[in-house]
Every structure is written in C-alpha cells, then in structure tokens.
Length: 79
Image 1 (cartoon, rainbow, N blue to C red):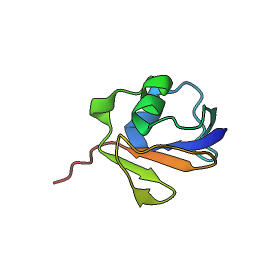
Image 2 (image 1 turned 135 degrees about the vertical axis):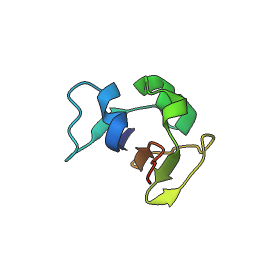
Image 3 (image 1 turned 90 degrees about the horizontal axis):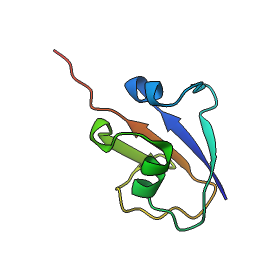
Image 4 (image 1 turned 30 degrees about the vertical axis):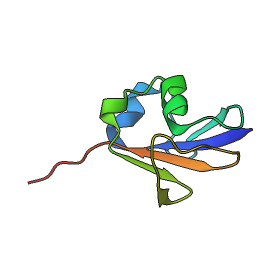
C-alpha cells in the first residue's frame, strides 16, 4: 500500500529532495499508525503540531489502511 505524504513549512527540511508539489509516495504496510509512519520517515514528533488524514484532523494513533493522503504541519507562531 502507498500513502501520499505532504509536509508543510519547516518539516520539509527533514526529507532530502522533498517536492512540495507532489509530496512523497511512501509504501507502507496496511495497519500502520500515524506515529509509526512519522518514525519511519525520520520526522521529529515534537516538530509536528497538526496531523490531517484525507483533509480531516487526526491523531497519532490513527490506523492507515491505504491510499490516504497524510499531511503534517508544524506549530505556527505569529505576532
């Protein structure tokens, strides 16, 4: 199974050659959790504030079944 993974802003620096137009096509086994996916990609968990699966806010323990679009966003500050 493959997932489309999209990384926002500063998270892109953790994946060499990340293409923001297409994201990543990541082959993973069915039943993997979002937490396991993040670990597999080598992303630091403390840098991720928002997780979206198919456009809906999700959790670290969400189970992925295939063909999902998973997006990760860092915390955003302003002032």
